[in-house]
Length: 207
Image 1 (tube, rainbow, N blue to C red):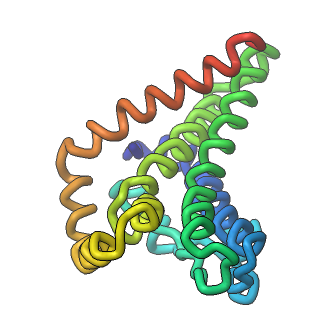
Image 2 (cartoon, rainbow, N blue to C red):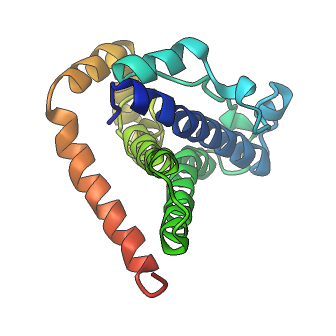
């Protein structure tokens, strides 16, 4: 998902920061809108990167393709409908990443049409699109503590919820194994292709 060349690391930094900040801010904004003010009290209801970025997590993302942002803490007990609202908060992060990817793609296509895109700006915009799509797909994997596990958990009966929660102690090991094997490509490649097909189907009448 992430490149290793110095040029791609430099060009990818804006995309990674945007993807992280948009993702966590969307969680915070949705939680507050649904009645849980925990993210606001913890200073997460902001687009300031310093509130969301874990420096070590960002460096790890740039260098070894595996990292993290500061998770937004929520209290589902404050929601009006805890199960539904937890799903909505979990979907908000990946959803925001997909919206950002779509907008960056629109900007890139407009720059192409206007003939004002340089190799550097093209790479930056392409990586904003790629990283935001990557964040959306990765976070929807149903492994604790990723967003996908929260969504799945609210759809399962209680006994299966407990079994899924029990996986959290092994989640770091599971994710590392997935990242070191081709398994993730079987998820990422079809999902990314499908997202691009949807994006271009929407944009085709305009470009």
